[in-house]
Image (cartoon, rainbow, N blue to C red; front, side, top):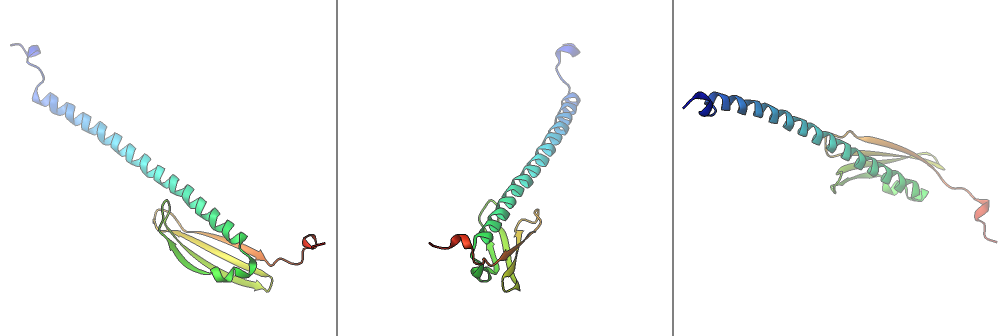
Length: 130
């Protein structure tokens, strides 16, 4: 039997397996990096949605019920579990500042702060009944 008919040697097979292993490690590392970036981007979208929801909720509340909503709650529902802290400061009898701090429970995401100033509605001449 000649060398050409004998097949691969053990060293050739080991070199081929090492090269394949290096390529697969590179592919796995790329896959891990892409998955981490996707997770961060999808969480960013969820964070933006939570912030918009909180802002809309407190913009729609009646002026006199703002102080009752002050405090801290924790929401554990996906896609973004978070802790929300609300403080309401009276700047004047007709002006209140609502500060909303949303802190995601996942340490990858940073806390966000929203500040909303609300004015007590006055007499609107357009709302008078005939």
